[in-house]
Image (cartoon, rainbow, N blue to C red; front, top):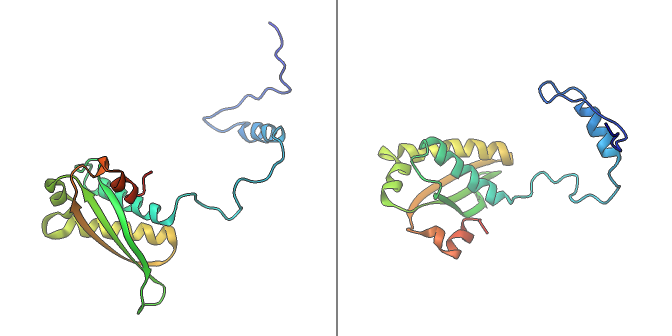
Length: 158
């Protein structure tokens, strides 16, 4: 068998992680030095608004047990500081569905589903942005909103 032109051979295990760290250090040693692409304090490339809308959307899909198709959208209408309560962020978000029946599912009986979606989303938003949050959700029906360039852009998808 012909020898291959490798400097070193690593026997690694993805199951228990044997030699993975050693292999990574060696691979990194071959990389050229360069300017970092992002500053060290960069945690996320998504905007805060987009992250908040995706958290709300995720809670809708999880809590409705995917009765709502992935066509549901969330538009953050406003994010502002509360004028009376210190360090409280007030977020208004519009949930967009394509059919009236979907609106009923998202709102739930006596508004209980929307309340649960809001509660769970608010908890995760607080964990993510490390601020107190008041979250106001309302649901609207906009048939074929995904077909509209404006609708897609407003929902944060480009």
